[in-house]
Image 1 (cartoon, rainbow, N blue to C red):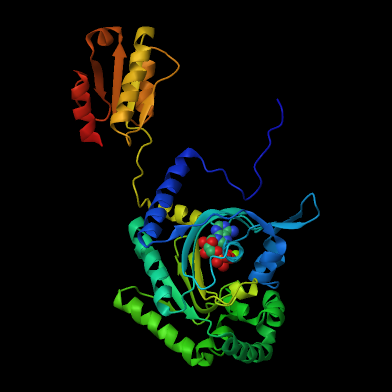
Image 2 (cartoon, protein in one colour):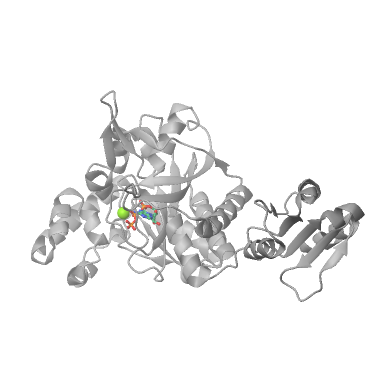
Length: 423
Ligand code: ATP
Ligand code: MG
């Protein structure tokens, strides 16, 4: 036998049993973003490498060690997108969607990062991203958070998710804080692990992100970012909190929430769960008012978030929170050649009459027992069976597969009435 080729580590097939759960989440997401008036944008999965270097930042985990970067046949450096925000801004600038306009956009698709695969962490994973351009107030920050809260509610996940909130303030305020933090961390260099020592030079705020228990005491004593907030950022944050309070959305102010990408300022937030082990962040976002200009556009305020679909799928699976519908409602069988075309006709008429009804036609012949076994396996609630005798009398035998009811011969009108009760 020929050797089988395997999928690439960390890049998963999504099999039918799982894809039902995916489709369910995707459909809920689509309906919710639409209910807030957001429009879909679709970007390519490959971009010029510089796009990510310039936006995410040279000294971030993503750019330093996680990108799938390669040379194409022309010798250009390309990268499989590790996230969507940079591409979205690039597309917005390129097509003139941003300057002096308001845009509320969303997208969904695969992202690529070369990380160590583990539960909730993969090399190809999927995000839903939402990005808003042209609005700088706390009202829109609140809207994004309200929208995600509605999503959790619809998915039955509200009680398992906590909202963490912080403000990275203005670039100037953050720079002052950075100096103070660097001084403090340098004083305590003896307690820093290797990773943090490196970050102390390149990106000291990221040290706050460390989960290393040996550093937690020292970090809890570190200067607080909120002590350096500028007035505008302070009132922005207060107004956001006020809105969330008014709507009953609970949050925790996490002073150490700094996010791993360079482009954020002011509001940052994460929805976290403790039901997924170490990979607890399901959704993360914030404001990135400088990015549009940094990527060559005119200064445009912006805010957005991205959520990881694998982690949501895992949560739904683990919590068994939703009952997923079967793929088939009704199975149509034919006994004997003469009944085959009439059976196809009945199935087609049913699809005409009930566009949302899922009708599976038996193919491949076989005796009654075999066909019924297939019907049962399909998950259908009804089996419609036609033999020469039924065809001659213009009726169909209907078997109830999930109810204790006798098989029944029905006219077309009776079938329609019966199916009407199903759909
Ligand atoms: P983490 O701290 O878990 O590495 P991150 O800060 O790198 O996350 P973002 O870049 O903000 O994540 O991406 C937003 C969301 O996308 C994450 O909260 C997570 O749900 C999901 N995500 C990020 N990386 C992965 C991955 N490798 N596999 C699966 N989901 C991911
Ligand atoms: Mg990461």
